[in-house]
Structures are given as C-alpha cells and as structure tokens.
Image (cartoon, rainbow, N blue to C red; front, side):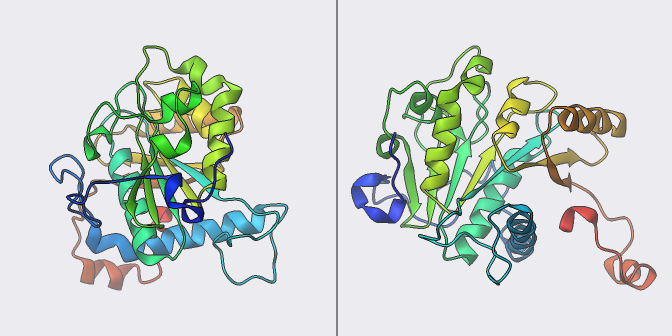
Length: 272
C-alpha cells in the first residue's frame, strides 16, 4: 500500500471540513466519556509503557533517553496497542479514545486511533457514517489517504471501520490485515486499536496478536474475576502479551486522604 507518514504530504490524508475542530468538540460526549482531567496521568502511564516496550524490543537503544519512536530513526517502528474489554460496555472504546487524546495533546509525536470493532463499532459516531475505513483498506478497496481522517494537523488521526462485514474473522486472519497494520505503523509514532470484546468476538485475539500488546479493560462490580482469569489464560496460551489492566468505573469507598495515609506507597497496578 506504500503508506507515508502524515507529515510528508497534505495529500496523504483527508482533512475534516472547517466545522470540525480539534480537542473535544469533534465527538459526541454523550457516547464517549471525556476524561480530560486525567489525561496527564494517562500520558504518564503510556509513556512508561512505551519505555518498557522499547527496552524489551531487540532494536532498543539503551543510550536513548526518549521512549517514543523518532522520525527517521533507523530500525524503529511505531508501537501498536489494543484496548479490549472482556465483554461489551466494559469501557474499552472510552479508554482507547482518551489515551489517544492524551498522547496527541501532550506529545509532539503522531498517533492514529483505529476503530477495530467491525461487528459493533464503538467509535463510529465520531465522524459521519458510511466513510471508507479499515475494512476497505484490508480488502484493497481504498488507499490510506482516502480512508484516514486528520483530527489535529500532523498529530492526531482517526480510522473508522468502514464497510462492516458479517464475518470479520477471516479478515483479521489475512495477510492483508497484517500489511495494513504495518502500513499504519509506518505512518505514525503510536497506533491504538479499539478492539472488539474478548469474550464476544473470536477475532479480538487475532487482532491483538498483530499488536505489541493488549491492555484489558475490566468493569468494577461487573466483570467476574473468574472470567477475567479465563480470558487472560486464553490470551497467554496464544502468545498475546497483556501489558496491563484497567479497572474501569471503580468507586472509592475510602476517602483519598485516608487511603494515602493507610497505604502511602500503594499504586494501583493498572497505573504502571
């Protein structure tokens, strides 16, 4: 497909009409929860995670203090992460969206957010329906510049699912999908996929196997620990690295001031 980096040419990407603005005005807040007040923390977690991935990569350069892929740095490619819940409505779409938002707002690097839930797209309402997207790229029905949308100039890009399919399993198993992922990696510094639910969609594990790792999103007081453990074991068995877990919608029953006095050194595991 010969993808180019977003900054190489304005012809590379379709730009939104003037009425669409950067920031939080371009999405429907009633469908995706805006967690802007936590974006500093999200970026810190993401920064540490990318640093860990760089250190574990064979081409990692220990003399580099920066953790983000450098434009034109030989031997390095963008990291690709997937956010997935065990079941629908666990909040994976919200987390993928807000981590991408945090990265684009606090980093000089480029990020592409991809709606990878072909059965029931979680981010389809962000832009007008019926546009070209991921499925069209995989089936070679569109070029990258026709499918991807620029949200923040030369920093933040979005790729929707495109034409949905009844059976996406074969789509994610294909070498064409692997090539699209590589093209997207070459076009940015960080690639974030919103994955279908792990229990409901067999293709979720296939998608995650093309990534550098998966971040599981569990819903407090809803996701059973037995289910989460079973999903973890299944992913581990097929070689999908689980990079972390987010416990979503958790309510603190102990006031923050008291909790810090009782457990001054405790950091929730999902916070890196």
